[in-house]
Length: 422
Image (cartoon, rainbow, N blue to C red; front, side, top):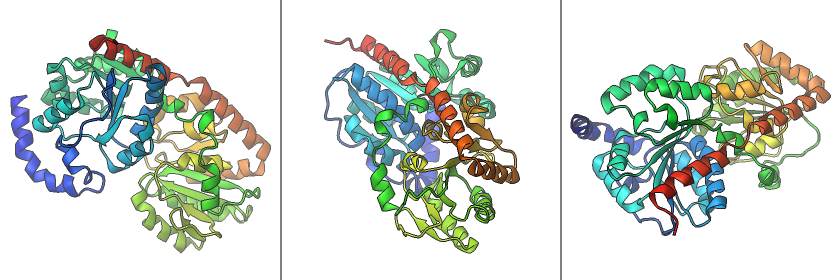
């Protein structure tokens, strides 16, 4: 640890200009060094939940809601690493007592943050393992839990190399709440105690609930000048560079048969919106941005964060990106819960569990752009089949919900063991 700390302090001044001016990391300067106001709440137990980006924060929200229901007097702190994650966290601020940026993993930053927050348990989303925080938490006997734990095959060797430098981080976790049995096996191979690894499912399946189905929908429809006149709408969520060109080519060809077909593009990274707009302009289609709506759009670019779920609800069909250009795919359960057929590409390593749930049951996997166009054509030509596939997808997605309740119970059990309720 001493060698690692010396290396970090030697390297940090050289990388700090990149960190301080990076679009995703530049905000929250003082909080990242452990300064700032402590939480207002003194409730117990105090649960610190951490996620890196917007998707991680959204995956923590269902568990946080359940903790609130089970233990109303608990104190909840949520931290995010990126600006998009912090933005999503602030939109759920009513659920938390305190929201802030995650500190740099430096001894001083971590010590000040722990002194300020005084958590009874720390919950890391996905694979957010930070050596200095975990070291100091162990010194202070603060239990640590991995939430929606995942150790992908592609990064497996990377974890092993990291652990040679940091020590085996999974061995320091008190509980590993992983997505399924295959994740448990990988965690055990990495060195986790099998008795501490508990497959509970994935809370992303719990993000969309009946109570939120209509929230914000009508305002969104009005803002984008959407008229529900029966015209088909293809929503492409979480797209990456190269996928928009494929989708635009499909839409241009399909509009010869379906002239009223419209496309909503939701890029994974909203800062790409201007570049995508140029692509659409060159295609000859009428384009609008979500932040600059135009009543006569053929293609709408969603240049906001957190509205994709609403866009899915006005779709006829859904394509989920990151799956054609080998980014590992993204969340296909959310559009399935909106009762829509979900199309995705061949590269889905990040969400293999979701593919197992939906494939052949409302989820349609394509291999080529030509196959994508053919499937969209077939579904638009057969609305009854498309509707049936959407119902089937929703039924499958609902069948795997419930992880947030299991996780909340285990988190509270761990936290109250350290700080028994009065």
